Image (tube, rainbow, N blue to C red):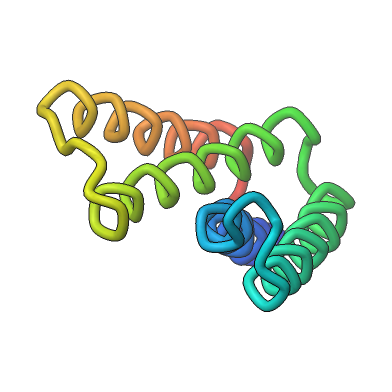
Length: 107
């Protein structure tokens, strides 16, 4: 259950990171509020997950989910470059996330 909570926390990390772009430097009230809410939810869920998971592993997975999701959405939403190298390194992060799950007894 902790891994599921951590995954959802990672999704909310993506939401607040993308929300930063839409908030225009936190100057637009509605996107700023959404960003703040997503940030709080993400942190609360991360805190819940680390009650059962090692902090180093949980934090690495949480930031990895956020990085992969944000970089991927950046390509689709903000026309950021989708170079072969960028996609390769995003894939390396995914492999790291899966590897941490496998070696952390998360099943």
